[in-house]
Amino acid sequence: MAMLNRRIFGAFALIGAVILVLLAAFGWSAGWLGSRRISGGDVTAALEANGGGAKPGYRRAHAKGLCFTGEFVANGNGSALTTAGALRAVTIPVLGRFSMAGGNPLAGDGRVVFHSMALLLKTPDGQEWRMALDHTPIFPVADVASFVALQRATTPDPKTGKPDPVRMKPFLAAHPEVKAFQDYMAQAILPNSFANATYYSINAFRFTDAHGATRFVRWQFVPDAPLAGLDKQHLDQLPRDALFREMIARTAKGPSRWHLLLVAANPGDVTDKATVAWQGPHRTIDAGTLTIRAVQPEEVGGCRDLNFDPTILPAGIAVSDDPLLAARSKAYSSSFTRRAGEGPHPSAVGQDLAKDKLQ
Ligand code: HEM
Image 1 (cartoon, helix red, strand yellow):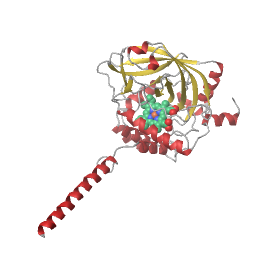
Image 2 (cartoon, rainbow, N blue to C red; image 1 turned 90 degrees about the vertical axis):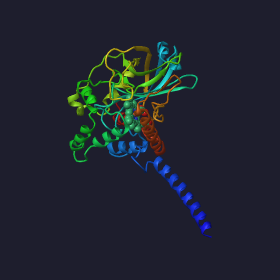
Image 3 (cartoon, rainbow, N blue to C red; image 1 turned 180 degrees about the vertical axis):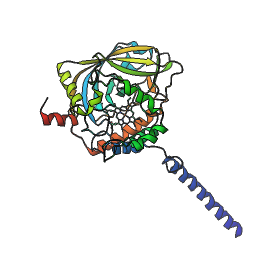
Image 4 (cartoon, helix red, strand yellow; image 1 turned 30 degrees about the horizontal axis):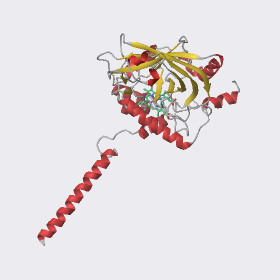
């Protein structure tokens, strides 16, 4: 009898141990144990709080946008670095979106960061290259925890409408890497048009050529239009939709063009930190010309219901070791799921234009 009891007890102990192990594994993967992993939902929640609450239907970042269409003419030179079909000598129709960073679609255009361009290049074989590019060569932070901390530190104080310096100070002390971005912004010209800004991939990506050789590459779209700057001292006086209106008016008169420059990393270049610029001369390939011929308000154009996830890449281009890329993919997906579930939104730019009947 004692033996039977011991066996029964042993069996229960084993089952209990298995259940404990399973619970621990589940708890860890759910982020209940150890240092909690940051989900895409955590990031969108921080973005929503920073933007003064969710704006139903709109992107949780870069909420204010304008769709565009045109074409990318690849000259074939990019094939030296990648087998991607979009960089063979081909012409591909493009769909894209200009945007201003921030979660408030009705915010004014007098913002320092970021003026942005998102692009979809789809080759006839169905492969897609999605990109979301900013007008700065580097990013303020290098990982998702720092990104969330940055959102929290810069959430406007309801009393002043501005970030609270008391919260910024410890953030900046804990994140010395932000200084490179601040220094860049302090001296950089702030483009006075979407058409004369350079747009950067910022993150590095891994390109594979026809021989199977791989290299890290960052890229940028450099405008034909000469750079001219906004008055950074008086950004608050800029009419609310000034940059979007300028682009609409400019495009009505003629197309805008950019050259796609592929910049291959030198040995020793940092490829996993978007906070670090690549200094000095680099092998740079002009891979072709992007021409934007038409712009459309978001409810009319095809860009509103797209997720410009920068990890959707054609064969021949892959993500690098930069952890921001996976974090971006999760955050864009979370933002997309929320806004898609909330239903379509009217264009913020279109609302203003319709109201004022200026265009
Ligand atoms: C951890 C870093 C980042 C996070 C968490 C983040 C988050 C987001 C989110 C949630 C969206 C809205 C996505 C949607 O609903 O479709 C967005 C859009 C965008 N992001 Fe980021 N972002 C990050 C870094 C960057 C970087 C480094 C760039 C530029 C190289 C960038 C450029 C853009 C652009 C251009 C858009 C607008 C895309 C569009 O027009 O649909 N982001 N970002």
